[in-house]
Length: 304
Image (cartoon, one colour):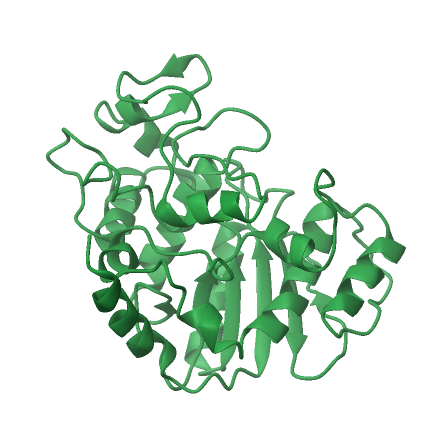
């Protein structure tokens, strides 16, 4: 692992670009292996205090990929938050997949591997990857716990330990079992990240450019907690609660929703938070982020 001094220098380079974002987009992601997962939701906010707007349509992951490509083509200065983990733990074991000779050396190589081994899967799913004889050894799946899954809650990234320190409840990306698992979402997201490579900066794997769009990893529960949602409540269930939480980020009340589920409300609140958080230089220079972490595990925007 790089030194704290190396990490600080790396973060300065990543946080030195003008943070003059005009658009703030939050995407609640889904790893469901169908064409149009119900869990996909996209909310858009602009500079000012107007409430974020839900872009309400039956999204597919391919649709979102095209939407993001459009932002890159128009050079929109957008900060886009993706609710998924862009990488697996690396630092704890010195590799994503110890004992596998194809284990990638960094995030972009990981995304390329996941996409290549899943190329036969429709809808940007990643079922084939977790069925690969070497990859599957590291995952806990329904009815199949790999012999290299360490047991317990599994392996965690450094920033996920930081999430725990904020009283959040992260799950290991190697755990693919249960309603709260995030591994499937992360794997399908990696396929999208691979296809955006070279057209979209992803912090902290890439320097923050002076113009154009930037992607960051978000954790929607973090936005809710920072807005004042008390521990033990994980989802926004009604319009009044959403407006109360939006107000904590200086946002006006939201317009009535045609789709009032927790995916939509998570995206709306997270877009409002991104608008407030984007200009905070400390969030672009987290104390725990080192050079090695920035190229392998990445970091959740908003974790110190």
